[in-house]
Each structure stands twice: as structure tokens, then as C-alpha cells.
Image: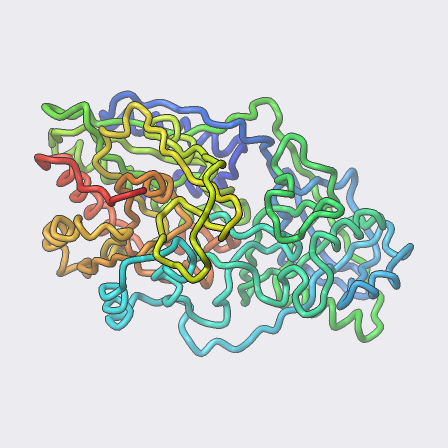
Length: 549
């Protein structure tokens, strides 16, 4: 808990590319070294792009009365050249033709650019633990067929009216980068939904019309909790709104100019819309000062080791992602995982254990932007896929016998296959263990479709039955860094955790703070991770691997 408090309270939010994240890199490296780990270093990956820091921010309605707002700027939003006082306009667009009525009327305005969102009463608790029915469902899960969100056991643990997670921006056409426990934005905000023009066109239109500030309602949360991620970039003219590959990411060095953007808590946002619809003329005062960091386009993972003995050339890894979003302090997402995995290696050192295999911890960055840090590390150390584009699909649509992983069939058209290029450590890795679903205690392990590890994991979990960890599931869970390993056929695992209030209150929100951490849960998790890592490091053989194409 001391580790987590310093990481979240003192260092604070750790947006990829920011000085805070680089400080966290340096601090964790030094801390791991002080505990006796060796080869502690920062490993560069990238280039990532621009860093971003918030220097000053305030927002409130000042006419016809003062209304302080619960709000936060979107990451990588540009700042304002000077404090802004401007009229507030509700951009009430339901069809493409509705855009016409706003032409020439938005220059210099603060634009409420998303529809209001209904806030329903909550009759379920904000926080919960996995009940026995859901654990049984996980244990009985069939082998996974895809990496889609439906295969993720955590979906069934979501509670309340916020079953749809995601970033706050009403414009972003990007799917959530991480944790497909994190689903897309609420349906009415999706591109083109319910007859509305695409969000990409919204932003292009608002930019051309000279809007001074674009405001979105939080896409989930209530009671003063808002969920906010990155600012949005307009969809290029003439390109599909559903293709994320067509969009330059907002942190890229060549990102286009965009209007400043912020997110407002739903209750505050809804009130402003209702006031405007009843004829009130609102003015808002906003001060938004930011700093972009262009001096170093690279990002860094923190890596350290406990050297092995007779099998020291082989590796057991554990890790978590250290980057976070910016409105909280990144305590549950994912300072909790960082603190627990760091504690696991500290336990091994404090017990003066001498593992046969080398134990290596990786604290990843760029996870929130798409598992970027762990993907880069895996590609460098273990392997990656290259595309082979000249194979031709010959099966008919009725023939579903070829479900080979890594193959996309287009029935009579060209299809592409992939070739795995193994790097020098591919055959040396035994397993990777990841923690990244909040503060909840461990209830078991997602086996990622690898049935052959079941007897091992069953034996390793047995000492922890009395603290609630006994479920083994063949299910995939997706959207976090174990996927980077699993994707190339290496044993990569995420632990099943109690959700607590991760999805309803803390995940990507302004309430992702130290006080939402459950200390006993995190201590239980650290202990189990230490045991799993030690057991894997002491086996005669490496963990069995799944058969891959």
C-alpha cells in the first residue's frame, strides 16, 4: 500500500508520454533495485508521439447564475490561448440536414455537442464481488473461439445502468483500446446511430464553424463521477467513419489541429441542456492551459529481474501496466496491478528464495492506447507475426471446417495468412502473469483456452481456497497486456478478480484514486501472484503451450 500511495498520490496520473509517467518509470526502477532485483532498467519503445500535461483548468457557468461544473479536459486537447468567456450553444443535431441551421452561428461559442443522457436510479450496489453462480459459469465455460468481448467472463459481472463503458468523448470512432470488459460507448452515441450524422463529421463541422470549445457529456457514471479519456480527431473527408485505421491518433506528432475539448459530469451537462431548451441564455467561463511534450517521442517500460539458478536462461514473467488516464490518479487502473506485482517480487526477495528460472517483472506503458508497450516488448524479445498476402481462399461459404487461427477467408477472393517470426527469447519464456482489473482480490485464473495448464493451476490455487481463489476458466479475457504474449502462442494469463466498483465508478474516471483501493484484497492478490511465479520458476519443465497455427 505504501508503494501504491506513492505511485498514485505523490506521482499522480500517468498519461503515456507525460513527465509523470517518466517519473514513475524512474521511481519503480529505483525501488526494484533497492529491493535487490538486478538488471533494473528502462526499455524504450516507439516512437509513441507527443506527451501532454494539464497546467491549469476551471469551468463554470457565470450567466444567468453561477453554476460550478464537475468537468475535466480530454487528454491531448489543445488549450485556450487565454481564459474564455462565451455563449453556450446546444448542438441539437439528429440528421445531417440539421447541420444547416448551425452554419455561421457557432464561431467563438462553447458547444454542448452530445445528447443528454438519462440517469436512472440504481437498485444494485455500485460495488460487488463475483458470486458463486458467475464463478460456476466461468468454470464451465467452453473453450473460447474468438477474442471478442462476448468471450470475456467479466462482462457478466457488470452492474447498474452503466453496462456500457468506454471513453467520455461523444465523438471518438475508436473502439476501446484496452480491457474488453471495457465496451464501446453508449449506443445512442455511436457513429450514425439513430439517424444522427457520424461523430467524425460533427467534429469536422464544429471545427470549420469556429467553435471555441467542444463539450461532451460523460458517456457513463453518475453522482458526480465522470469518465474521460482522449480528445477526438475528425474523420478524414471521404473516409469511412468506422475505420480506425483512417484516423490519425490525437497523440501523434502529425495529429491535425482540433478544437479544445472537455467532458462534463452527466447531471451538470443535462441541466445545461434543459436550461437552453427552455430559452435561457448561458455563458460559461473556462480556463484551460496545457503543455505538449515533444522533446522525446519514445515511451518506456520498466523491467527488472531476480536471477535464476540452474535454469537461469529460462524466464517467468509477471507484470501490469503503469500508464493511466488523467482525471484520477490511476490507482485502480492500474496502480493496483503495479503495486501487487512489485510486492510479489519483493516477497520473493524478502523470503530469500532462489528460483530456478529467472523471474522478470515488466511494468508496461501505452496500455491505454492499445497495449503498445507490451506489444513492442514482446515483438523485440519473443516474436511477432508478418502477413503473407498471396494465399487464395478456395473453400465455399458453406464449408466452415477451416477455423485456423490467424487466417481470414474471403470465399474465392484473396486471403492473408500470418507467419510467426520467433525472436531469441521465444523458446525461453515459461509463462507471463498479469494483473489489471482493479483492486479486487483474485478469484482464479483465465486459462486462455489452454486446458493443459489446468492440473498445474489447480494445484497452485489449492492453498488459497480459503481466501476465495479457486476458479479456473477456459475463457479468454481480453484488452490487457497478457494478450501481447498470448497472441504469439506464449502462455500469458490474467487473473480473475472481484470487480468491486471498477466498472461502475473508477475505471477511466475522476474517482480512480487511492481511497477506492481495498488493501486486504490487494495483499491477497500479491501473495497469490508471488506463489504462481515461484511455482512456475521451480518446475522441471516450462508451462505447456497452446497449439497455434
